[in-house]
Length: 316
Image (tube, rainbow, N blue to C red; front, side, top):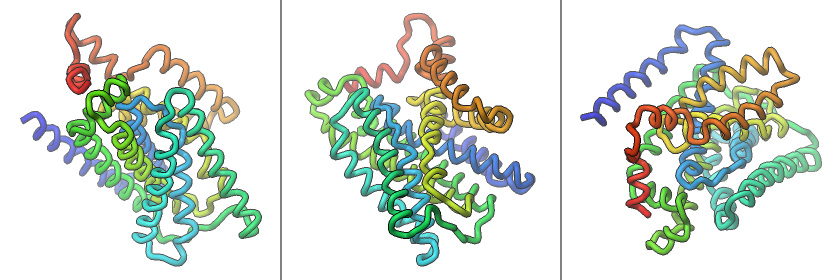
């Protein structure tokens, strides 16, 4: 019964969000586009990194791949086919990267994913300058902000639904066991490599699609815009603030932080990076499990084990 009520409330909220831009001006719709984009990015990031505890900074790599795919193919292919091509390219890159790097762990995985994003940015820059003779591309698609927002809202709904389903599937339980202890999970019969690769590829494909959908918003794209490492760090901070292991945690962190960072970037552009670093440090020290986990910990009676820990113990 509680699941049915939750679905009804979620459907009502989705309907309300769908009609919201009809009553807003261009600036309000722009805020909704950016906010919804980061909700999807944070949720997709947490889909893999939440249960496995693998901190990935490759978000902007796949985001930029999606944006540049639209920039290159939008003049020759129909838009739905362009999105399919972006998903295929993102999935292919994710599989290649996952097969070669998901055996890494800890700081090594973090460093590699950060380097991957920079490598792809430099490769795209080199190709544009030396092969095409230009640094950026124009995107001429008949989309306004409201059309981009509706696409992102639909993608957000699909992403949250997938996260909910995975968290209750055998794959989700396997990944939680992997996050607790990979050695124990492997000895329990879990195919650790396959489980991590499947979810990493799914997460990367969704992130690629976010970049592809948002690309028409800029009209003109270049590597410095779509491969900006700030996107990866913002996504990470938002997911951690809300709680990367909770279904609604990334969305809870993305909405207020996006609005706050928009205000800070407009009023304190020279100090934005410093403030971003301070936020990250504070979250790591004071809210390592996120806001939702903190609230649940305050409300939970002393000595009671949360359901997530019970599931993880059973899976392990």
